[in-house]
Image 1: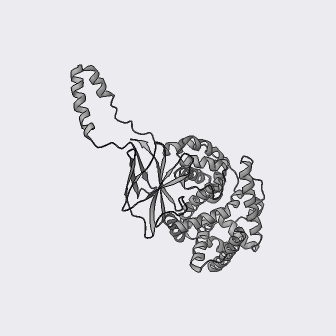
Image 2: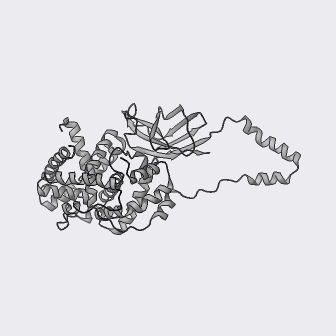
Length: 187
Length: 218
């Protein structure tokens, strides 16, 4: 699959500086949203954005266009960097919670970015719908816990505290949920 | 899908790592493993792809233009190379005979010296633990590594990324070295990846790409 962002990543792998100039405004708003959501702090998100773009440049050669969209790969790098920061934070910053008001299901129903290429959008939409359908197979609270982990970087500990269950119970719930999701999404 | 128990355990660990469920130390251990274990890294990538539809739930937010800072960090101005023009200016001022005599003195060691590498590249991992110096003399590429060897059951594999962005393998490092006949040109990118012993079987890097660098005229 070669959407526009994938094509730019291939140029980045060849150390094409002009491609980085084109890519930045295309991906920065999404990355800013992702990093702010996960880190909960706009100043830190800006700092992280810089680090993420540097990693995109350094690691573009490892992007395989046969596997996933270019934007998906970019978000994976950004999430990984955000988790790296979250897991390095002192525990004293306390547990964060899955917000109940903006349920991820509603957000998954929002319209894809109109700036994205049509092909990329169709592919993402299909994958999004698959994710929504597969989450519907999970008990509601477990679906909410998995989304909280993905979207906000919540750990087993954060989730156990919030759902008021022992850590091991949360772990068992979510491992079962992950097996269900894997079976469903691999179909 | 039914996986053998050990594989299933690894696959769920990869999922927990991608989602961010693991506590600090466990997350960091998985992070380190993904950097060196190609099979685990592939499982991580599979989960990232499975879940990428969820990225749509992240909103777009106005982002500042950080390109000046990013470019300053990625492409620091190089210190100007020592200029040779001084000696030529000086020669121009001297007598023709003097110039020829000096020219012979200056050039003769160069003529006797071994062929100069035409293209070089230095590949440095992010943590600077592994540094690979590559030189290409027009026919032969030599690469020498400084740093830790690949782990048990693993090999470092060198790749050249062609104009169309597709990596082609140049071979595996043995005892921190690789010498191979190759056709290379300035501007091509060399990349080093960590692969299962014997190298990638897919023809493309499967493990993490540890470092990349551009071949430049030295």
